[in-house]
Length: 161
Image 1: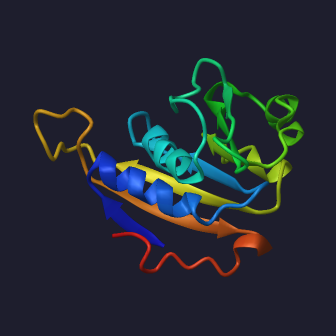
Image 2 (image 1 turned 120 degrees about the vertical axis):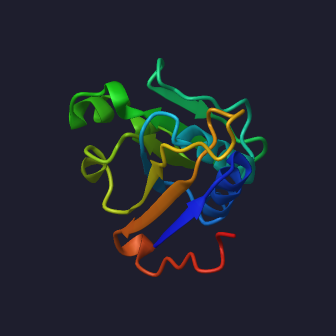
């Protein structure tokens, strides 16, 4: 499935929609260039599953765990940009975090070693600005790929407005 978004609010709303589908152990892999909206997506997802703390990019710390506000799901947010091998991701001991969903930015090359099921979201940002006063503006083309039996019947029709 492929569609376009043009605002941060739309990206966060899409994150909320995906967040509503997730259960403990689910993995979402995000790909796209710097500034594409990956962390903005995660902020929406985090709002939906109701975690504690402000969601920012884990670029410099590699991973962050956001505890649930109540008895819900935790969020493990990983930035795999600096990882050089699949064993680097395994070394993070992500499976030690129970009752969590996992979002891995830049994780396309590593995810198959940790799960057989994931949602892969590619965000492609157009070079043209839609608002000259906002350097983050621009059309984003979103492609969603469902991998594995867990997501074999994923239907996003009607979710994205």
